[in-house]
Amino acid sequence: MTDIEEKLIVALDAPTIDQAKRMIDKIGGRVKWLKIGSQLFTGAGPEAVEMVKKAGCKVFLDLKYHDIPATVSGAVKTAVEMGVDMMNIHALAGRKTLETAIRSVNELCAGSDVAKPLMIAVTILTSMDAEDLAEIGIEREPGEMVTRLAAMAKKAGMDGVVASPEETGLIKNTLGERFVVVTPGIRPEWAGKDDQKRTKTPAEAIRSGSDYIVIGRPILKSDDPADAVRRTFEEMSSAV
Ligand code: C5P
Image (tube, rainbow, N blue to C red):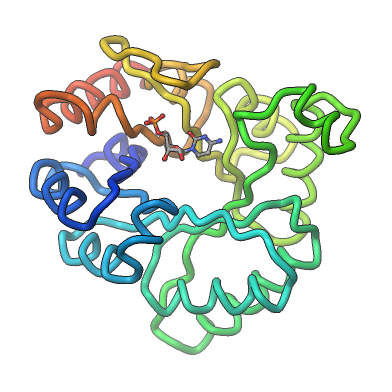
């Protein structure tokens, strides 16, 4: 795998373990990372993680935990024991939840051979605009909330954030190059937009400084997913 190939995470958004398995058979040998989200995990549970690991891919467990410190701490410890390589927690769960989760992961990994996963915070969902925020009592612009929550997540010890392509540059500028940015909402030049609104191409996302880009439907729904992966890598490579 080249460095650029390390930066692609394919969202394994499938309703059943059998459908996920069929997709892994098509692309598992070509990609380094697969993302397991709430649909697949709700249906298949830890078996989905095991299947992806067996295929030789790293796992981003995208369950966006949002709960009290003790509950999230328990969940992240279980995820670490499962062997996931990246997971995420809602920053809106608050600093204490993030700090407690990080402490639990560090304690579990210290002195054991369990590798510490990348701990990523979710700031404001890209599906929410200013009006949605106002409705829940947040009278601030989404961009302002994203940078505020990202700064809090960094202080709490998180490794990075999920952010839209528009926000990557600002986050890197304010919180430093080493603070990881994972970017969904990416559409290769040859793909439609689906329900994503503010999309960027793989090359634009890499140029803006994203460490990882997440792509689902353009690859999953392609007639030839393996070739879609190849063309995505080509676009990503054109940016470096
Ligand atoms: O199919 P598509 O490429 O739009 O998939 C993007 C993936 O990234 C989905 O699994 C979605 O849940 C996830 N995601 C997102 N926007 C966020 C966070 C996660 O699209 N803000």
